[in-house]
Length: 192
Ligand SMILES: Cc1cc2nc3c(=O)[nH]c(=O)nc-3n(C[C@H](O)[C@H](O)[C@H](O)COP(=O)(O)O)c2cc1C
Image (cartoon, rainbow, N blue to C red; front, top):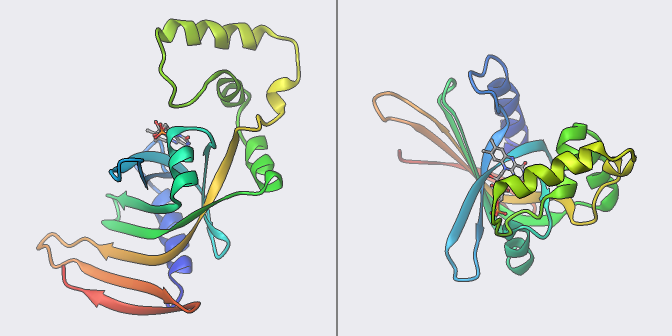
């Protein structure tokens, strides 16, 4: 396959079939913090296309602030049941309000309420305080949870390097590397 985005999509679709995982679309997104350290965490992969590799989050979370400061990111996936690893490097760009709104509407009401109540990445004195706030919010007879908070959205990663590793028990892994130069992907191999 000459387009790594197509290959990523194919592998992800394959990974979602018969996955032993409950969170089948979890991938690790790494940002760079203010001190230059990598900061990695799992997020849900939302879509993979030539428009970018998309995940959703709070724009004012730690990761959101880090991306705002430096949008160089990495994304890593490991699908054990297939023996596939994918490593992406690129730049993250915020989704438009319209696109973010579409993803917002796919969230369950519970997830929408949680998103309204939480200030992601901020310190929390006592988790009970948050549970009480969620409970209080849940009782409200309002359609507000349907409305996307302005600090929630997502990012599309524009990849310029994607590596696919097919795991082999004898460690003779196949490593296919795609790099984007002047809008054209080229493929090479790396030793395992
Ligand atoms: C399986 C899994 C999926 C997650 N999906 C998301 C997600 O899609 N968006 C998100 O903001 N956080 C998600 N989280 C929580 C993040 O890992 C992280 O704790 C949170 O985004 C705060 O990160 P930050 O403080 O570095 O911004 C997920 C966690 C796990 C374990």
